[in-house]
Amino acid sequence: MNNMISLIFITIGILFNLLGCIGIIRLPDTYNRLQAATKAVTLGCCSILVGVLFHFGFSDAGIKALVAIPILFFASTTGAHALIRGTYHFGIKLGKKSVKDDYKDAVK
Image (cartoon, rainbow, N blue to C red):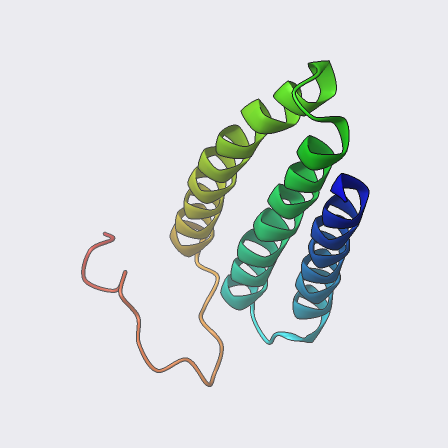
């Protein structure tokens, strides 16, 4: 039963990672691409780590996967924010279809 649950979580994780990669290719500008990369791939990797936890249980590998999940969430969101803010400071413009610029008044 644990193997089936772990297989389901790992498959969901692979699908999220695949959708994140497709988003990187298909989305129009840097900001949207980075959002697709961080949100989808973070959920995909965390789902794979949950699958690893179910597969190995609370052994060394399972505990490492459990510890890696919050580290991955915090690191990816903080890194994405820093990359987007740096990209904006560097002068990369939003896409033509973007309707709102939250940083326009905040960043000088």
